[in-house]
Image (cartoon, rainbow, N blue to C red; front, side, top):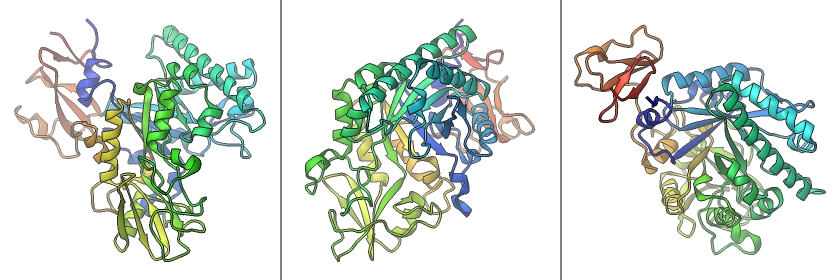
Length: 453
């Protein structure tokens, strides 16, 4: 009998279609934010996203994957332990960053032997730490002096990684490691950095970074992640929007079902220089840094919430996104309404789902916006048609009382319900959740899965 924990059983646990993905990024530098802004793996809701990508690891001078932060190894353990609560959750490690302003991929991809060393290192690193895959943060890597050469070498790396992952799965008898990438959204960068039609087939999914289209580096206000162009756009800026960017990826040969639309949980800020405060108003840099992210030019959504209490909020009808102003500060951000508009658009385009940058910039604790924890991402889940997820309040049940105390003292995991074999219990942090197998199936404790009687 086919074991269904990784197939039908997984879909049962999540209640979603196999093609739907909600991929969420976390960053290992968010742990250094002050007070309620501090974020670690412990803050992740294991039922919120289908995949979590841990950012960031890098590549050393020996072409091997290495950690960056002092406690990455401990955070890996805590992240991957979430799969005990939700066996359907997938975790990936993102590799990239810069060394002296240059992508660490550049030197590594230059020679076949260095790529082989990297790939061997990747497989060992992921397997020993219980990750399900690799995310390539190949975002703006090409040298200005040799972009075509770098692009071709990246194609070789992607093909070689895919082949090695397939061989590893065959040899280890384990599920094949996933392969994804964070990729640029500006057309000129896309053309310079990727041979789209040659690499797309090798990825399980591709995270289009459909944000940072505008920001404080420009001399006028513009939205961070607009769905469409505005009447203010001219020249190449007419393509600085989601519709144009994703359409370009599709035109270059990327399958729609591989592309994930990027949803930012932050806004980009500007400092106004005149009384004008609409779209295209003159600016001369960023507004003041947020008190928690402490980086000029953007505010986490939970920082935007505080700003909105005194700001004037406007909606850009042409682009289906909001902005807010107060004094000389201007921020273009995303809210429930703009997320809903983008979900409607990605559904119409038949994309594979969404990815979120990042978990740690939503109001993850629910202590800022009075909208509950993860208000943006939870709204995104619902807009995409995901079912309600388990809560920390034990769910009601028609079975005889075991729910009240079943999981007290038990390790996290799945357990049979002897009173009703068509259901099973999930224990997480001492709470008990009741799940039901699909019609005709019963829960087998031997495989921790729903299967035929």
